[in-house]
Image 1 (spheres, helix red, strand yellow):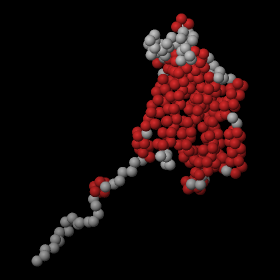
Image 2 (image 1 turned 90 degrees about the vertical axis):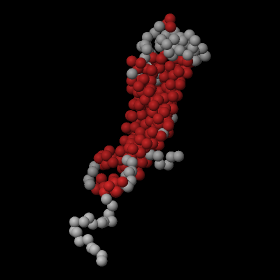
Image 3 (image 1 turned 180 degrees about the vertical axis):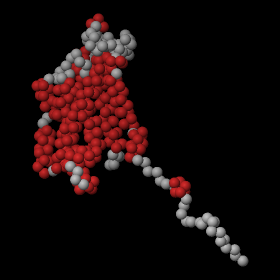
Image 4 (image 1 turned 60 degrees about the vertical axis):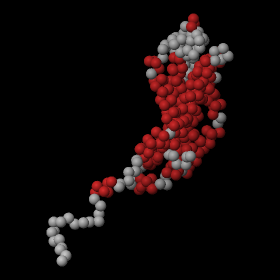
Length: 314
């Protein structure tokens, strides 16, 4: 005979898996910050460029501590001493001295301050002006967008370097003047990109939802549009920073930028060109510094683009 278990306390078999089994087979999806960290660790260009930029930034910030001597001290008895890699070089002047006996290593380190300050602040000011115009034109459209496009077209029609030369000759080559002039040269690039992207963003559902709940236009632009533009703005700023450093070096080389005795990499190249056939290190050292910093900033900017938005890149 078949015995039937009538014990009501016996466990009832179910087809549902236990909680432990569900947790065991759950799929872990990495968050966007985790994905960006993984891409950053594998991006060689971003690592190299970022490392060089950070090192130059540390040298610039701690220049008074790192520099072996004052970059303005002149010792004519020690003029044009060779760098350490020459036979007569010494560690007291690792990069030698210039025509006035000033320590070249100290002047190169303090020159990094000028280049980074001008590059960063010029890119920041132009980012604020250009992004604001681009977002306003792209969001409101109509006559407002027509005015913004007219300003962009006028700016694009101007020859950038000639305008910079003219403005510097009028307003001088002080640090603040150079930052304002370079910011005037680069704002249109931010405006073009942010206007185009804003026109795409304003048709999204979350913009319509913000409008439906009564959010103001300023609240929508600052709280909804701007965060979605930060990736493009950061990438453009990193690239424009490199261009600003190059333009400042060119103006200083021509004698229209930073004025002596303030050390600037472009000014160091200009001062050393009279001795370039006899003391080539006076030109090659600041020239290599400009080259390495600009390449590193471009590599870092391109890496940021790949890390934050890798779609469409190979």
